[in-house]
View 1 (cartoon, rainbow, N blue to C red):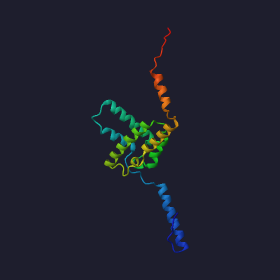
View 2 (spheres, helix red, strand yellow):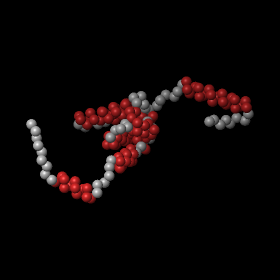
View 3 (cartoon, rainbow, N blue to C red):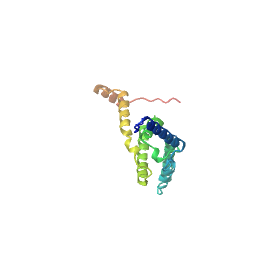
Length: 172
C-alpha cells in the first residue's frame, strides 16, 4: 500500500506515475547481489582446517557438499534466513535420525559463527533455529507410543524365565 502526499488530483496522478516508473526501473535493472557466495564461503571455511586427519577431512567435505546441495549452489551467505533454515531442517532432511540432525545443526552453528567473524553474514539464522526441542518432543512421543510399563509381577516372571536353563539342539 502506498500513501500519497499530494494535495490535489493532478499532483497525485504525477506521484503515482513517478512511483510506477521507479518500480519499473527497479524491475528492469535489479540491484546487483552483494555478498559472498555460500558455496565459496563453505569451501573457504573448509580450507581453514589444515591439521585434520584424512578421515575427518573426508567427513567435513561430505558435510559441506550436503550443505551446498541443501541450500542451493547459487545462494549468497546473506540470503540464508530463518525460513530457509527451517525448510532445510524440516523438509530436506525430513526423516533423518535425530543424531544426524543434531550433528548437522552443530556443524552449521560452527560454520555460521565463522561466517560472522569473517563478516560474510550479519545475522545468525542457525542460532535462532532450535532443533533440539523439536527432536526431544518427537523422541518423547515415540517413547509414549511404543508400549507400556511392565508390572512388578511381569518383571519377576521375565527374570525367572531368563535364568532357567534352556536346551539347544543343533541339527546337521
